[in-house]
Image (cartoon, rainbow, N blue to C red; front, side):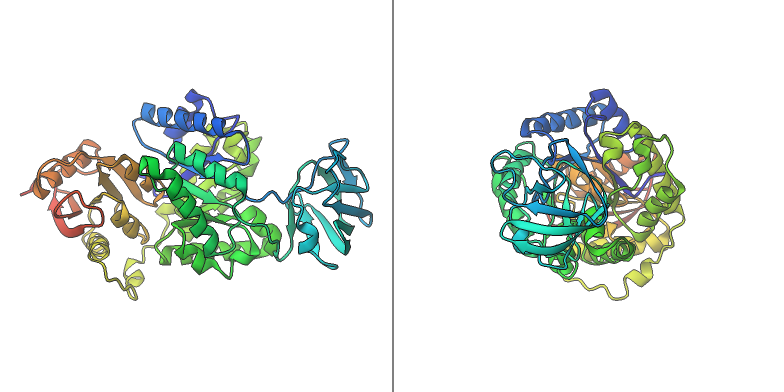
Amino acid sequence: MLRGTKIVATIGPASSDFDMLVKMIRAGVDVVRLNFSHGSGQDHIDRAALVRRAAAECGREVAIMADMQGPKIRVGKFEEGKVLLEPGASFILDAKWGSNGELGNQERVGLDYKALPRDVRAGDKLLLNDGLIVLIVDRVVGAEIFTTVRVGGILSNNKGINRQGGGLTAPALTSKDMEDIKTAMSFQADYLAISFPKSATDMEMARQLANIAGEPWQHKPMLIAKIERAEAIPALQEILDASDGIMVARGDLAVEVGNAAVPALQKRMIAMARASNKLTITATQMMESMIFNAVPTRAEVSDVANAVLDGTDAVMTSAETASGKYPIETVEMMAAICVEAEQSEYNRLDADFLNVKFTRIDQSIAYGALFTAHHLGVKAIAALTESGSTALWMSRHRVEAPIFAITPIIATQRKVSLYRNVHACHLTQQGDGSAVLRQAEALLIARSVVSKGDLIVCSWGEPMGQAGGTNALKIVRVGEFS
């Protein structure tokens, strides 16, 4: 059975070997994530080349996602590498500490984020190390934040800081991110993930920088907004409008809004994105136990399955495949869970169409193809596309027939790797519309997707070869093409 939900896998020390990458792609990886929080620019350039080579070995295209680090809201380093904070103890976060090489100790530690004293006030709750340590702000004096430890534990070098409820003023794009965007465009990353955006302006700035950096290669990436700040929730629709998709980044988001709020927010965000014809990736700790164990917990299996049932386009691994012991097994298990969950989905396509409004011809063709496929029970939908837009609109609704984005454009093949229920096929279009449709039919037969007598719904544009020009729809019975 073809899997509709896509898998985004982060690569790192455990998965940067060519043979390992080939095995992971064959196991089901659709998109490779390069985490720019680690490694140098050259490291990412080398890994991107490795991904392209491994994908070619597998005979398919996978997308590359460059994930920007964003602002470093972290503590500095300690003399002993870590300290043990006891509940009730006093502890100082000092923005000036470390400027002369001082290291942290049991009393205080420096800050990478120098503006933190300006952003907090007495009574604020600060959560460190993904919320495992909780500090209550007593007072702020100059560059020093005096706190009392509410929940203690071991605090080690460079752990992250969140303010419960959000409110930190750090910009989404740092000077490092701006340089990293240039690096990502040098190898034509298909997707650019922006960390900690608070508004549409953050995404618009990132798009402008990416488009300028990609201009020498005539390349424009798709932008994913990582929703991980409390401030992003009320601004979600404007962020969606300025992005091509969102990542439900449940780690930092949970720290800022509370763990209990995240499941409902996940469902709301995925629903809003689909309604806005945008993509969604569900991320963070999906198969966390497989960093060390060959099988996931039942709770992790349910987590992945529920994301699929919510309608996410993709589920994502982080440390599981970047540094874990079982990267291939993680991908295989995720793929199996996705297939099983998809089989139990309830198809409500008619209800989805009740309030749909559109003014574009290509969009109406996309919806017409879905409606026809649903009621005729066709075996496949073939969308002949230049830009991939028709396939994107089709993928926003649940339909049993797989969607094949048939395109001569390699960049489009890679881009649609993230679209739910869309499978990329390369076809160098030759001849008029009828000839190309025959070629598309032959391609699906060769892939054993359809056989003689099956119905296919085909969409295409005339004249052919124009992006956004889809204006035709045809129902084809395989073997009776005329």
